[in-house]
Image 1 (tube, one colour):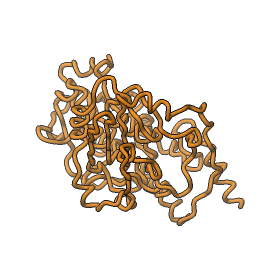
Image 2: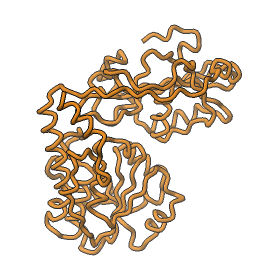
Image 3: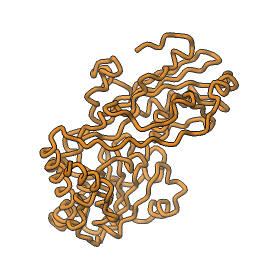
Image 4: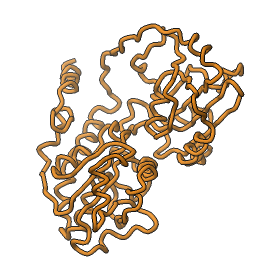
Length: 376
């Protein structure tokens, strides 16, 4: 019992600098370092919610770095000024037309921009920001595997934002492996600590007291649905979500988007290809094969089809707010007028122990709104 009490107390006490529990603080491993190259990181809002992200390590290691969070930076004066500089900054983004960062002459690149997020999130940022997309691009050569063992990488050769910046700075400034040696110390310490704790605990996880959110004022959602019926679009969202207690659990991602326009019966059903490892229970939860899910559409296709489907002045009906939140984080434009179809008795609460996060199990699919069975 003493061990459990100590762990709960530790979970409540966090380092104000790095945000980690005091027993896992990596601040002693941080070495603030000034760079000759000006560094800017654009973080996708959804990446900011990922536990154990590396951007905080970057901020502490590179105190002169500029960090901006968002998707659309067209009205951001600092980003606009940076993109307009001559010579222009280089964008760390692999692909066609990107130069090997090692091929740049010393001093050729005075500023470096990186995007912190998954590949689909990074592509979304580029779509929204033409000035950013027009910058010259550089990419890293294939190197050592990522040291970030506790977070699955989408493909071989992928590394964390911290590692990518350290490798790029070493190449741009001809510093050997200096930045990698200094900047990766806290990451290696974090990984070692997490793996050690996982090995010591095995399947043990402390049970925390369930804290229920305060119930919102009762609303007559049925009356709202009836009032808005002629311009109502019902949506159902499924997520690629990992079990809440999985030690390497990534953030949930939008996987299925189903919409039904009540006035006409028009439907839109899109399955998005997972942008990361498929959750171990996701295919079973949806009653579909993993191969079927992995053969889904790109996120860009969902954006295009939703843009053609939606109409001005419509309202959105959904069960809860989780799915809508995922859609907004992916940059999907949604009507401002929304109705939560849950009755007042289904007010937001903490997820039940062991329930797969991000699921809408027990909620009606759009099929049921049209009188169908809506069976899985």
